[in-house]
Structures are given as structure tokens and as C-alpha cells.
Image 1 (cartoon, one colour):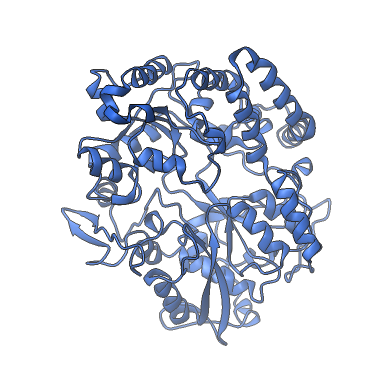
Image 2 (tube, rainbow, N blue to C red):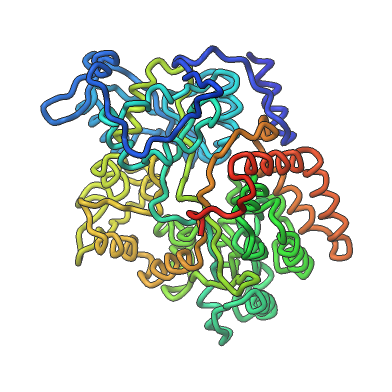
Length: 582
């Protein structure tokens, strides 16, 4: 096992293929599918045969809770955004208490780094020490280890489970529970969590800097570019003695994300659903879509003109440097980031820190500035899915693990995780649940990620949807008044910008792409192409971009594209658009 781990670490450092270890057979049987039988996705939660409760050692108590007759125990992965932080808080204590009360399951939380989690989940699976309940953004890693028998097939448990896991079905639905089903075998090795407010990333600018220069908020890439040059030219006025620290545009070694909205604006608006799928490997970072080269050309020009930090390529995952530069007030614009990124973290966040130093009028405002070729501020989004959820096959009790996911989907649980304890985390004011700041990050009631995102793993923190406990109006007010440090108009504007021009792609998983197998670090490889092209001399841009992209295509990309094309045509024939995707 040590040799396998060493090999894994070496391959991760080289950003190459994952060498998967041979695991034990899954603890759950795989459903058989004959050529005459095509696995189907149920339209409604499947009714449960009463005999299944006895088979699984379950009973229903007087309050309607599905409980284990004999007590069970599970371990749950909990992301950690700091170093060696105790995963146990007042919120995990609440979850553990209620899991025991409702379901007779003892829960233990296992600390795992949030930053670099994609690599860490590989190591946990390789070492065969992954907890019973796991979450990751590394969907490729889950598939890779599923092929080695290290991930449980959930299809047998989900079949006929509507009355066993009612909250799971109600909140995630068949579309997410079966999103990753193998359409040939019917196996389900993972399912998707939910984004109640579908979002990805939008641009921001320093509103106070724009006002100080007498400019208007940008509404096009030309105006955005002019503003960047204005920030640089007026560094003395905007930063005074810190003028030499001026960074007009935020950038890291992940340009596919932190410039993602700008990059996606270069994708033709008439791109078909077929091409969104065919070229959609790593879709959230737009590596293979048509038109993106011209977006990178802009970034190359801006880098060479001194609008981007000269060391941006060194700002990798987990490096606090770019965040600290923003908090210090040196950064004028963000081409792309999560729609609420500047407003997270209360006093310790981007906006909170800037306002503390420069006044309450200082900070970032969302802008719609990147139009596509049709003049639309297009936001290309998926179907509102979030993280990948799965259960390793080494777990002792996959039924109890699924019960934990079901418990997280209860509306009362989601309320507690996202809103908190009344009088401690929030107070009700004028129809809104207004957050009470807890500055001490060691306080057990401190939410260690926005709306407990890292432990509320079935729900993305960007949306609530807590009906019937909370009305739609209350939810809107709650977001607008989420923090005493952030003006409600800024939150409302960011949500409005994010919602403008959305096109959702509901194609989903229509077949296993075998040429993607083993490639678990596409984000690193694709970003390496972008970074090298951005940092090239302007005269060398075309040669560098073409060389790097051609190499990536030759190694993996072209094979994936061709296979995706064949899969689409085998499923949809000559169709290039699907009715649900516009």
C-alpha cells in the first residue's frame, strides 16, 4: 500500500493520470442489465415494499422516523478550511444528536482539508481509510475508484426506497440521485447535491474606485478594459503611498475559474446543446469550447501591460496571497468569482476587511460587463447540481450512510445548518433572519464556512428554499440582510447579475466516456495551458497557446471529444438541441 500511495503522490505532483489501487468488491451487489434491458430513471419516488424495512433492520417510530432497530455507527467526512481544526462544532453536535434520536445512528466526524480536497479524496480512497459519508468536487476520482471496486453501488438501495429515504427523494429528486447512473449497467456510484440558486461566477469592480475616478460601471469588455487601465494610471490617487501595490485585475493559477465569466462570453451564443456536451469536458472552466482562445488573448495583453500581478501563476490552491491582496485593498476588479465571494466571511471577508480600512462606501459591486456575440450577458450553467456525494465500499453500513444524507435533506436540518440557532446565529428582524456576527472562529457556534456549506453537503449555501418553514419573501430578505457588514443592495445586485441571461444545460450523464477514465486533474492541466499562454510575450501568444492546447488535445482532449460526439449521436441521433435546454 505504501508503494501505491507513493505512486499516487508522484502522479498528483506531475498532474498526470491516477494509478488506481485494486480494492475489495463493493459491499453492495450491482444490478444486472441485459442488452434487452435499459436502466431507467423513476419519475416519482418509488414505493417501498414493507418487507424491505425488516430486511434492512428498520422500523418506523411513532413520529414517522425510519429507525434502525439495532444501533449503527458511521463516520462522516467534514471539510476543514484551516489547519488541524477540530471538525466538531455546535452544528455537528446537533446533527449527531438528531441522527441518534431520529435514526439510532451514532455519527463521528472526520476532519479533511477543504483546499486540495480533490487530491485528498484520492489519498483517502487509496489508503482505504475514507469515511462512510464522502463529498468531493472530483467526480473523475470517484469514477476511477468505482471501477476498482472502492466505491459502493447505490442502485440496489435507491430502488424502491421512497419511503425509507423520503427527504432524500424530496430534496434531490430522481434527476440528481440518478444523474451519474451508468446507462448500460444501471450502476450508481455517486449522486449530486443541489444548488437551490443556480449560480457559478460573475464579475466585480471596486465601486468606490469607479466613483473616485468619475467613471460609470462598465457594461462591456471594452469599458471593463478601459477601467483597468484607469486604475493603473491613477494608482497614486487610489492608493496613495501604496501606489506600487496596485493590481488592476485579480488573477490566480486558476484562470479558468477567476476569469470564467469573461472567457465564457467568447463562446458563440448559437452553440448547440450537442457542442456544449461534446466540448464540455471541464465545462466550468471552458477549456475546449470554441472562441475561448480570444478571451485568453485579452488576458495575455493585460498581463503584459501590467494589469495582472506578475506572480499570478504561483498563486495556487490554498495560497492566501491573492485573497490577502484583495483584503488589503490593492485589487480593482475581479473578472469572475462566485456571485457572493466578496461578501462572505463578514468582518474577515473581502468586503468586511476593505470597509474596515477604507470606510463603509469602499468595496466591490457586481457588474454585467461581458456580452457574447449576440449582445447577451450569457451565463452558461448546468442543471443546478453542486458536489458529488458517494459512499466508499469499505464502509460497514451504506444504509446508515444514505440515512445520513436523507437527514441532511430535511427542511429542519437545512434551516439549522444555513440559518443557525436563534439568538446566537440570527435574530428575526422585519421578516428576515439577520445574522449575528461571531468573530471568534473557535466559538462552537461559529459557522466555519458560509451557511455551513462544508457540512451541509446536500445543499449549496447560495440558496435556501426552506419552505414551508420560511416564505419566499423571508428568504429574499434573509439573503439581502445576511450580514451587518454588507449593504443589502450589493447582495441583491449580485443575485440579479447572476440570474441575468442564464442558459441551463440539462444534458447530464448520457454515457460513460471511457477516454476520461483516470484523468482526475483536468483543471490543473487545462489551467496550465491558460497560464502559460497568459504569461507569454504578446508576439508569442499564438504559438504558445496553440502548442499547449494541441498537446493537451493530443494527450486526452481529442479522444474525449470524439467519444462524446459518438455518445451523443448514439443517444440523440441527428438532433443538436434538446427541448429542456433553452
